[in-house]
Length: 305
View 1 (cartoon, rainbow, N blue to C red):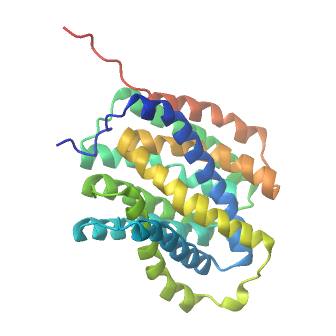
View 2: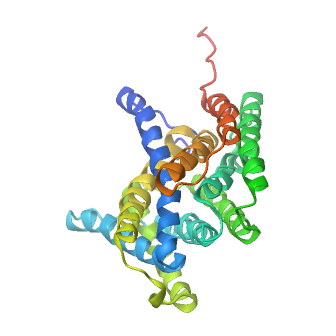
View 3: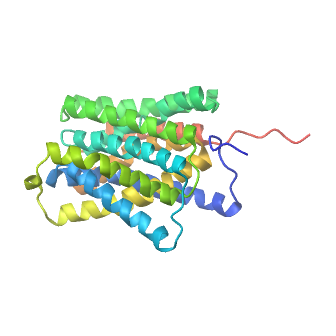
């Protein structure tokens, strides 16, 4: 039996669809920072997330429930619930709290350091090889991100408190990624994603109601649109794609695509929110792109004897 910690063998059809799946995942994930920034402008972040996760969990699980396919072992359901607390409740709860005082571009930027920490812990805990090519790619990706961070921090528009919340969110998603690969839950990723969302919602509701007031919610078209995207595009489609990529590509390679999030998040933040994007930010994209190529490029196969 092959371990899910190694990239799975895929059919030619799956291989041909992989670039499309990666591109769609990157677009959905990066735009979620902008949608989240809009959402927390009109609604307390934990209330927004508790409602998002609860609705997404119900929508995800109602389809297999109607079809009589809602089957999963207790061990696997518990693993998905634990991952949901790390990857959903903690990661986004901390990240959205940070978005109240940092820009959407910088929020996406900090979380994009995910590949560096994931690669190190995947090598230590999962046995994934940390080759020279991967190290060079991760170093270039980190350099590109650091270039963008340095410039945006020098502008002085983001607050330290929000940055610390976002760093804690980064630690949460790295933990969730490693847990998914190490514990290797079996069963439908669709059902597993529903369990993750429901568990995150159940954890967040008491906290959200304890620290937030529903009177702070400002219902308008912007909030409704952001909430709809976060439920359908973020919690449902993006997370299914994310765990699919983890199985197909491995933790290190899949996480490397997070290096794409800073430029994409900044572009979306510029187009939708009017956040400033400088030339120094765009120059950081070059080493990021090279780093992704090095980390994700398949190693050359030795010729058959």
